[in-house]
Length: 442
Image (cartoon, rainbow, N blue to C red; front, side, top):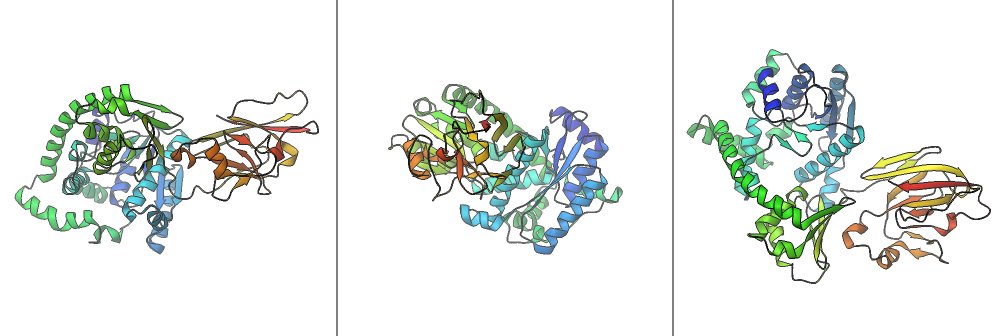
């Protein structure tokens, strides 16, 4: 099996087994334990990531402790995150499973970028691909849904995809590996489990090679999708551009495409918009600006001549502290650089992405967070305070870009800088200033 997986990695150009470091998603179940052991035996540099979704009480705690020990056994760096999944699902109006998926992949990517890892490896295998293909077909899907689970999508790779479930179990037994059982995998509450327990056994009676047959069908569908992909790619080159993690799509270009809804759905697939929502977006092309559409991870706003797409806030952003002497902060796409200067001969910056603050007026630790309703500050050059919500309106910040506005707060609770927009007058540099903290958004 090791040789088969090694060849699959090379044939599909998933990653370099000798030079790329992988962040391996490990739940503690059979599949992820096999994945971790296989990659280790293949000599792949790796780190371990574990998600605790707060759904299974003591069992989930035990899973986390098990994976932590497993990472230590393989001498791999270990990362764990504890999510309030039900609260997030209720907040976003989505299922618990969808919430868990959105949270974990967003966090995996955050860790990957922060630590400089090449890829995120998940333990999806041949049977998972077959189940996904049938579930997609049941719910309604486009071409992408009919090729099941791709071997590589973005920075996510799936080295076990050619391996069937029985072979994975045989590997566990032969190598005397220990794993954790998740009782929710047998619960009929989840659609995938009902498909696995009630539907697939019947289909396998009809075709004992069902998983392999579906894999071949997926390959053929993938060929047809490649033709569509090239057309969509040409459209994207003309209609789409991205600045500062915000994506823009020109409406006039989209109107001229054949099968507009299909093409737009493919363009919006990385952002998680369903086909039905995309049809509503197309219908809104002629509507007044400001129409808003949400996916589990992104928000799209119909502006005058373009569609504006931004990442949504996945739950509460929380707060991040900056200690005395700290020179950088990298969080969720925000990179700040902090430098302390003597005030004498210091030249005040004019760019919006820089702020010069009187260091002696700041109290540490500083805090960075997203703005909230009720926030107020004293914009530099103005007298009196102003609600931040009103300030953002005055600045004509697009609706979905407001969600990502962040504030730098002094330890006494006062906003010192609306990052990238305006410092607070109370922290401005004056003739009496002795030390200046220069903060730049990179």
